[in-house]
Length: 362
Image (tube, rainbow, N blue to C red):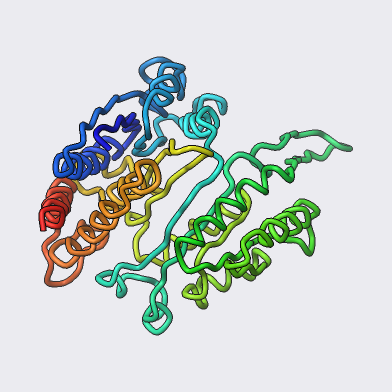
């Protein structure tokens, strides 16, 4: 590879700060590998509302489609709480995923050795190691069904339609099984098939697709049991595949196992190599501009970008190793530890970039 083009959507709150540090790390990788890095900055979320009156301008969609990958900071904040629902900053995120055909969200949850004590789980639970990925379907389910509110005999009734088609389930199942083949060859499909017809179709389809991957072990689990098992024995999981609603909840739950939401990266993927990469935390407007934000989730999102969009698996591994090394020398305030200096956002980014450079040159 001799060049890459990344569309940068800094967004709101701490977005510009954390994205700046992630780009610093990406630039370090590109310079070490003689890759020409082109970045194109565009507006999304509240920043776009302030500038042009809508959370996802067509210009942003066009620029993203012209890039090889998209790096996103965060969207939203109380400043835009009172805007009409169709103009909420979060609509920009949903819209860009749809415009780019991104239906598969990957959220890894792993505990870095240096952060074992920060996990809310008991030491004996995390001692054996936690390394799982939630594969969440992004474009179906109740979030994209019909939403209605009616009055029935003087009583307000809300209704949201949950649905999945077989092709939608097939494509996300294939993503999960392909991923499992590169990891520990175990897939857990999460549903509520004892109650929901949608889940029964889900389970039947995932089982059929699983037959095409005889080298991968498949088991099914109800979502309530999966939620319990994530805190009881997270080490049992490798790849969890589930729908939009359950995936939203379970991926947030799994993120807390790591010790800090500031450590969790994500990737939204489609059929090709294009992907949108972002930390899962919010825009944290209360600390924006103060140099307090943890940039590691965004830096780890760059590692996912290197791996999934550009096939630079070794370089991605080294970025993750650099983060692990950096945690032994300094922390941002959200993950501070006795005996280690508390670093600013920029200092944390500089430290990781320094470690990445050393590893690449070794």
